[in-house]
Amino acid sequence: MLKWTAPWLLALAALPTLVQAQSLPLKTVTGGDIGIQIFSHTFDADRDGAFDMWLDSKKIGLAGSIVQVLEDDWHWGGEARMATGVTTFSSAARGSNSGNAETLTEFRLTLGRDFTVGQQVLAPYTGLGYRTLLSYLKGYTDTGYISPTRSGNLVYLPIGVVHRYSLGSDARLATTLEYDHLLQGTQKTHYTDIVGYVSDLSVTQKKGKDARLSVAYETARWSTSVFFHYWNIEESEVGTYANTTTVFSATEAHNISRELGIQIRYRFGQ
Image (cartoon, helix red, strand yellow):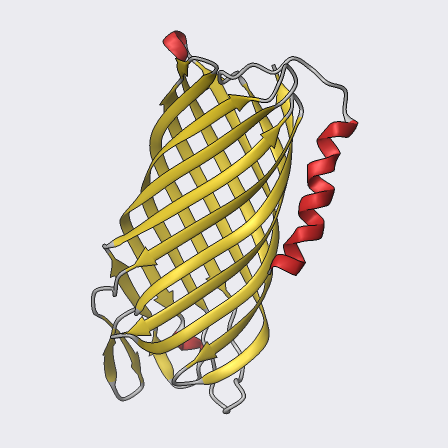
């Protein structure tokens, strides 16, 4: 992963120096940005500590945000991103295959406020987030089984803070630390992809959390950053699925999802 990331970090870090320097405030300003994300994404599931399934992919996508400053340093914003890639699938029960498409989509609304502390600004925020992951796993594995498509969504409460520190009149360092509390998740395994099955497994996830960290070098128009996301979701409630003769009961296993990547964004507005 370090070999894969290092060249991009060097290239992206150099890009902002090519644009004309502009005065850059530390406080939040009205405007928006759009950019590209490149990251690795892994999903590991276990049952009582024993391997259940694993997904591994490299993704590329678009990300953007808008923000509106209100009175008394309050501000609200919206964020969206969509990324896609090719994933490798491995299951304790069904074997493994590769070359499967996977898409991650996320939307967020946030509300925050700026606090000036000397030559720094702290901007705590909260809001509501929605994240979906669709893994097109339909196909045969190396052991002859069919791996059904999986789709899941998470609704969560983000609680975070942005720390901005001036690096001069035309640049700043912005560090974001965030905790996400899962409100509810739904995971669906599309067993009807397999001949003979008449219903899918749909289960509810109620316990989970996420930690996020990003560090960005920002100028008036450009920013480059590295980011890390870590989701930890407990085993789901019991659901059922069926073939033509039998109804089965099952859960979504405890799972951990990790994202590690880089991004570059262009800012527009004030």
